[in-house]
Length: 384
Image (tube, rainbow, N blue to C red; front, side):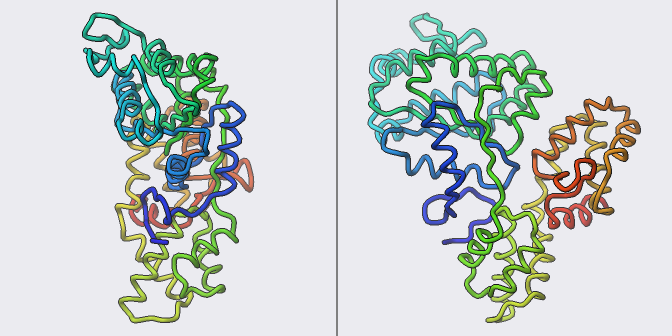
């Protein structure tokens, strides 16, 4: 297994997530539409690639990343292009009969707010066009459409297009999921590095996603994490592995991979054949110098929140990186400081929890960083 840090992995480099994969397949086979729920860096995209690369016999899978879509039109362009892709059709032996031939010969003239317009002048709205496409699929396999970064797409549309357009896309998707002609042939899987629920809550539009089957992608257990760490570097003995896991604490694959990478670099540099706890400590210090692995945590809250909301979120994280914990009443006082309504402040805290910055698992009224490593980086590079 290669140690691939910060990127989705496939094939032999994928650390099998049996529990999550079993839950996802169970949801699909039960006829529901999964929403993969987890903060960034936990491994959702790698899990989706596993489903794409090794589907069950009765299913055909298409994966589309819609992160760069910033309008409803862009989203539908990406989805239709993925379904029309030659590699997808050849791999899954799907025949898109007349609808595909129609697009090949007539072509799409434009995708607009009113729908898809063909060169012959016929206009179909998105839901109708999608339904027509699905009806034309000639296959004994059920189609799974996995949409990565769907929440980011909704957030982009809110920012660069309009709230109305974002609501329209959410409403259309719910309509498709409620259409028995569609659901008999298609399962939708939604995922992303930010929380769909957090984004939709801003629109007061939870009714458009309350039919989704939320499946949590959790950190590794200690035993799983220990086995994973050993598979990446066999020189690490049990005592040092468990010390490493204690230092990492939030046992998502990314942090284990990152520190193992730094341990390997130290071993090469110093010609070490034995890894000590001091080596682990040095590796963590070295990891903090890789701004490219951490800078997105700051960039994310800059893009997600308005001016005073950003200042509020940043000060919470600054204080947590210094103090270690923060009580709800202190957060309430900070909301007053920045002139934020308490409901708005609660949504910001919820977003910070969902996106993997903080948690209140031990006490509902006390928050702390999920990752001690992110906490160290934030204190060193942002708070000071």
